[in-house]
Image 1 (cartoon, rainbow, N blue to C red):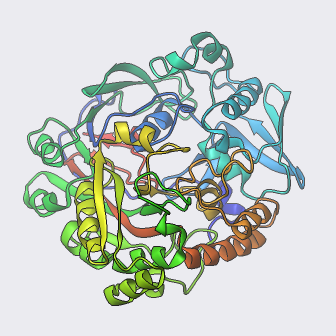
Image 2 (image 1 turned 135 degrees about the horizontal axis):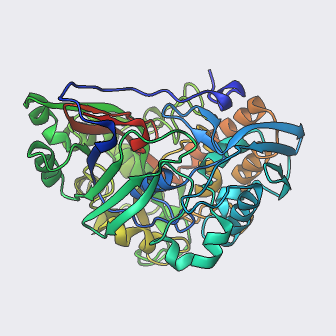
Image 3 (image 1 turned 135 degrees about the vertical axis):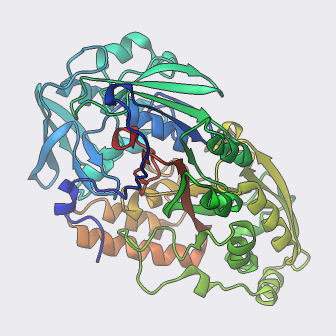
Length: 518
């Protein structure tokens, strides 16, 4: 059964609660300290995206459509919405909402945010909005270029700005002085040390139970575990796989896991000339891309590097998503086979291999540096000399940002919380510089007119079923062409002291508003 029926768009959020008993505390005094893997890069939602920043955005700001912990979609700043005709949506806004500074939230702020996004580095957020109009203070109409079935899902990622405040503050200062309608306000941010959020008691969704939330960036996994066990923090994100059994054995602590949406992927440069490869780029040949796929032992990565806490990827999106093709499995199409991989390299004229560089992080994904090192050993078996360029995520995103003249082979991750492959395919695989808002993170410069046409068709139908079929056809083409190798889905692993109620969301966004602490 495919994800995202129209009824699901309005379903409420449900989560997986983990509760352990401890001595009670007064609600108004409740506070919590959360250890993250990294500091946010931004607090201004149009400045860029990565997990730590996204977590902060949704504490500080709200979208029109709210994405629940289980990826269901329901009312946010918009109470309801309807199709007026095939290309027109009408959104009725929530009355009585205020920004943290006391300014009233109105339709003008929604129109402003859409237009502001077009001018930012995130035009993808509004790529399927042709026109937006404020009908009155509490009603907006959005026209799409063509019938577009999943507009409400897209709007769950567009966080609404205060027009007056944003214009007065300026883009450069919005990272330091965020102003939204969310359940928390920025209290203090000492970069690389701590970020403190204070409850916004006039929040339209109700007063937050936890009044003070402190996020501490702790990049070293062992240090993060130690901080939990010594009581410095109450919860940690990304418990190291090697520490799972240790924490489970300690009294007073819980380990909480759930399958992740985050798909670790390897993007291959398909330009004729690639920055780190001498001579013509071998990866323009599908046989070389297939050889690389067949040389990667995902089971070994899972067992040796990930301690069994990962799931090899069978496609680019999970089976719950629109665009997933039942019965197709990347691992079965291209199983580990070194001899076959060598033959493909030889057939492509590269029996002696070549040298290239892998760009990867050392603090963004679970055991990312170790995965990169393992990949170098694996590709050496087919005579590819893989040089490693490993860096912290604070440097990584700028280094690989499209268009990049630095990269040939990139290890990154992608998740699709909208439950729909179209947003991923339009961003990662659509031909660059062909259509506004598309191809903006196509790091391998991949171009396939058939894929582009299928994404266009998917984005021009009001039928979920038709959209699914178009995106399934795109999936089949991409799995055959291999512009990118899906490696594995991480397992989201948290650890918490007793007395913490944690909602492990499917999208991995830690949201203190849904938490409790005793």
